[in-house]
Amino acid sequence: MTRDVPVGHPDFGKAFPCQCQSDVLAEQQSTRLRMLSNLNVVADKTFATFELDRPSLSTEQLGALRVAYDRARDYAENPQGWLLFQGNFGSGK
Image (spheres, rainbow, N blue to C red):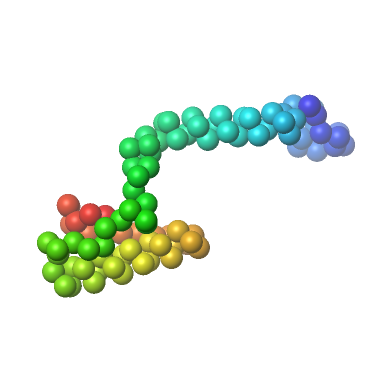
């Protein structure tokens, strides 16, 4: 399928998938990217399954964990700018 654009337009003469195929291609691309990313191994890691009650942590560590959790959740709901977690090896970033 081509677009009805004048000669000289960047899309002139280019082939584009029709809408019915665009949806199929988008789903195939999404599936391919999920497979390549290997994110399926963390699919069960969600805000709903995250455990904030960790008896092995100090009060200070629990407070920091809560702040990090809240900031991550806020960012997930409104992803503006960047979110960066940093810490020592094994700190659970």
